[in-house]
Image (cartoon, rainbow, N blue to C red; front, side, top):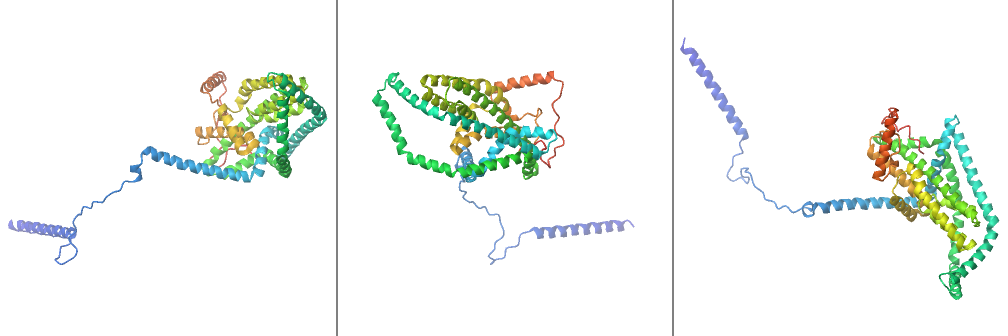
Length: 461
């Protein structure tokens, strides 16, 4: 009885060991390389070390700074090419683009009046029509008054100009320059000869002006129609444009346009007020000194003041020239003093007090923008350069600080912050002090705005 279990146990252990050996042998056979048969062309697979010569790449040859500069240069070239193509398209479509831009500036000027009428219960179409008719009456009434004044004084001006030229010649010969009559006559003859030689160019210029009369008339009616629809459907137009953008970009773009529109409205209103003060100041000086065409010259100063910094100065020089040839050097010097005084008032009082609240731009940026606009598009470019820069300043500042489209806490356009760090800090301290004294909290954020639709506050055309 005792030998049987041990024998069975030994048989079972032997069978298990034999099966384990068989399985290990089978696994080794599966993983073993194929045997080498003499005469075969293929030898056993053995690891082979391959040494390959690696040529240096551009990243290894050029320094990192050179690669970075090349990448930036390529992008700059693409940017310049895109800007050039954009300007070419604008040049081809200037007959349409210029009236639309003028209508946009006029809409910024008259939109608060139309909005006030709509709030009083008037329909949008009727409000836009009334504002447009009032603007036309104001413009044409002023133009008719200026033209009638010019026609009534042109005869007296011709006689005064002849006397003034003789007085200037006497001053040149007897004044500090001590020019002889022969030299003065020589210069006058040169001017007359230059006019005679360029008579053909002047004639061709008049003909080209006559050919552009049709474009002016077309642009005028296009401005009227565009202005009417901007005043009536400006908010809907902007909402439609925002819906064309990707879903995540609609709200930020809508709010950026909302703040940019408020900046443009403030800029246009401030510019009109500054231009009015310049025109009144210089016009009163011309009227007191009895300079001919005082009203047309004041209107010219008003229009020129829409180009900041340089516009009122250039038109003031025209007034000085008229005073010189009509009333003599003494009156011209007094007019020069009046123009300088008005410019000082504008630069030190009106610009910081009125324009500074509308938009904060560095004077160098203003000058460069005007120069670039004049080079690219002439007088129209100089007119729209600064408002375009102000709008871009506000939009970029808002998108940098609020990329998700959140409203600013105080609902102020971000472009009105001063570019001077000291002034900006002082303004922030004053605003903080006002908030501490005022128990009212800032307006809450507009929670009704979703990322599916543009912000309803965007009421820009």
